[in-house]
Structure formats: structure tokens, C-alpha cells
Length: 352
Image (tube, rainbow, N blue to C red; front, side, top):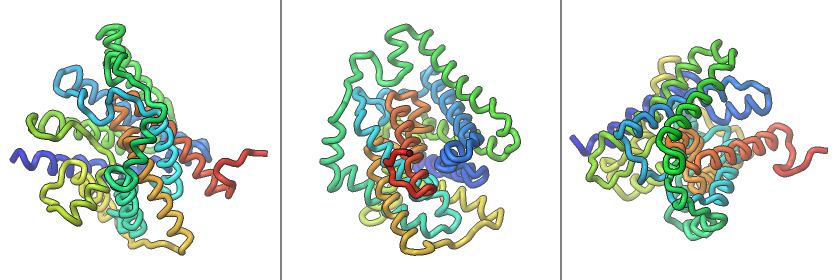
């Protein structure tokens, strides 16, 4: 039974996330586009609500002593600033070119979008190449540029550092203020209340992130080699491709299982709403744009150590130092990509 905790838990967490995304039309690129182009912050507020729930839930587990974040992927003793910024920019730009993020590809795939299937394969190959393949040496070199040693600060996450420097009370207060600030930002948008499905979906998404930490950090075998993690959708694509080609899927871990769960969740909603549609590329130009975007997301996501979900919700829920840097870079990259697509201007051209 212990061997089923990670794959089954990953599938269920992914199902909840995929269900929420398809049910409420949750999309990070769509949220950025609405905010930057149309001045509509409803979907951005929804993501803030999801982040508030994720932060509150995970930090409550940490304060209760149920979850140890000392060994997680997001919290390390070094802040790779150049890699985080460059990776975030590449990922955001790629997401804009594709029209959705890595998570959104799986959601679309569950509804019958064959464009998402092709893009997901390219993303997985790029992610694997950057993780342990031909691009791995370059990734390691880029990670050394501008790296900042944070171990002297006394912790690997913001609350840990604050707790060491100012005391546990200050750390708890900081968590409350941050989660509360995100919640206030979300609920202050009166237009969000006109979208009850969007609000419900964002709550489910935040809960899915917390559930992922519970599965891997609380319920999993403490003597196993699985370190705590939650939803993230770049590296699992690469692992899935390798398992399809050379390993048994029965050995799939949490991350790979979430991919199947997200697809199943979005499929369930799409089937119930009669939204299942086979979709393909309109022309060669669209295909080139999607392939380039998927390539950028795969490489950028590995450099940034996560995607808009992996850093924006999962990483943010741990209050790691890397998360806000990566997320801000992703937003900037997506904005550049959207301006390029909508206005037809070169990516770095100045306005006259």
C-alpha cells in the first residue's frame, strides 16, 4: 500500500487541479493577458486567492511540525539569480507563444487538443535535455552566474531566515501578513464576485497544492527517497518521456502521476459540458510558434526551477526566496511575448 501513496496521491492532486482549471477557465497566460492588455485583474485576483490558500495551508503544516521544508527543491542554500531570471523570461515568452503554460498544455490535452500533445512532447524533450542531457552542462554554468550564497542568513526560506534573525514570532507574523495580503488583494476585486466558478476553481487549485505537500511530505514513507514536493509541470514531462521509452509506468512517482491526473480532471469537466473537441494546428506558422514556445518553456522551466504553477503556487507556498524572482521574470517574459503577438513589434523594440 505504501508504494501506491505517491502515484495515487499525485493522480488525485492532479485531478483536482485539472478539474479546477477546466471548470473555472484558470489560465496563467490568460490572467497576464487580461491584466496587461485589457486591464482586467479578475483572473489575476483568482490566482492570488489560490496562492493565499496555498501559503496559509503549507505554512500551517510547517508550524504544526507536520511538514519539513529543509530538503525541498525550492529551498536551497544558494539563490541562482541569473538562471532564475533568464529561465523565467524564457518560460514566460514561451508560454505567450503557445498561448498557455506547461500546466495548461495538460489541461488542453485532456479536452482533445492535439496541438497540446505535440507541444508537450517538445517541452518534455527540452526539459530532459536541460536536466540531464545535452544542455545540462550549459544549465550548470548559467546557474553559477550571479549565484548568491544564502546559507549565512540562517535559513533556506523567508520564514526560516526571519525566524533566525528576528525570532519565531516575527516569522509567524510575516506569514500571516503575506497570506492576508494576498487574500485582501484577491477579495478586493469586486468584479471577481461575478465569477463564482472562477473563485471556486481558485480555491480548489490552492487546496490541490497543499494536498500535494501532504501526500509527499506527510503521508509518504519517511524512509523513502522521495523528498517533499507538490504540483509542478516541467521536469515531470521529461521524466514521463523517459519512462515511456525505457521504464515501467508502474514505477511512476508523484510528478508523473499528476500529469495523468490533470488530464483526467480536465477531461471529466469537458465531457460533462460537451467541450471535447479534436483540435490541430491551423497552418505551419502556428505550428512553428507552438514548437518554439514549447522549447523555450522546457529549457526556461528547468533554469527557473519550476513553471507558473511550480514556482507561482508551489514555490510561493513554501515562501522560498527563488519563487518571487522566477515569477516576476515569467510575467515580464509573457508580457513581452504578448506584445509581440498582438502588436507585431519585435520583442525588445522601444516605443516611439
